[in-house]
Length: 339
Ligand SMILES: Cc1cc2nc3c(=O)[nH]c(=O)nc-3n(C[C@H](O)[C@H](O)[C@H](O)COP(=O)(O)O)c2cc1C
Image (cartoon, rainbow, N blue to C red; front, top):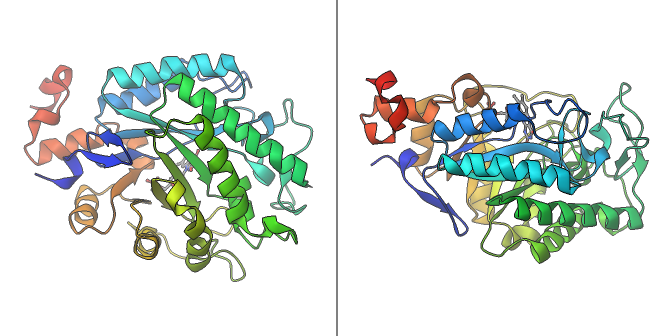
């Protein structure tokens, strides 16, 4: 059997295979209410029909100013929760597991509807086109932690199987991790502190059998920025509180990766896996079936994360199975399309 198609577990959650749909903002909550729409339901359910093992719903704000844009999803009220319930049921009906990525957008929030002020570890703007954030006071940090807890409670009520804490791509928790954006002199200069507070608060309301993923940007691609060694240092004290690390890069500044090629982020995933002895999700141009298979078979990574490849082809997993004559993975209704 091929590892890519084999069942696997994250914590106590069983997945039918090792393919994960990475979170991707769809900017489609166009009423600015953070509520998932028919589009979201169809979009995520299509990938479930496409046999993706775990689907991670796009960055979802824990407060209005936690959204990246006005059109992003949110989970700070029960109306949103009820709509997510429907989405979760739809994905479950097609046999996939579903997680939600909880986010606070920090200084990269561009939402304006109901958002007068944006927040960050330090009062440093992302660039001249962005608003200057207010430095979070300790009391405001407590409120952020509480917002993550409240959203996690709702995520559980909505039926999500897993939850991902977004600490990547230059949003609030990622901003705490990077020396570029965190110039605090109090205890929160150490990003482990707020991340641990968030995870501990979530664990109070999140069932112990449901896993928690954390997504990090291992490097900023900046000389004075976050690098993989510092990322490992930050994750060390919290690694026992999470089940897996989803390894990405960049986003703290507009600086792009030095080089972009298939698997360009895998080296960071490998280093983190090795140093922390934790399972990892790798992603970043892994759309080649052969490359994805190689990374799994050689035990370099534990799960394959796909974003753009699944936008282009919701049937990426089915195509993989078909090419390897594993026709039992073709959805019954679609068999004739794969003859
Ligand atoms: C349209 C789009 C939206 C994205 N939104 C998110 C997001 O909400 N959260 C996140 O962690 N990453 C987000 N990403 C990054 C992807 O999850 C992924 O890390 C990146 O696209 C590289 O993987 P790929 O080469 O498979 O696309 C987004 C990417 C795209 C293309």
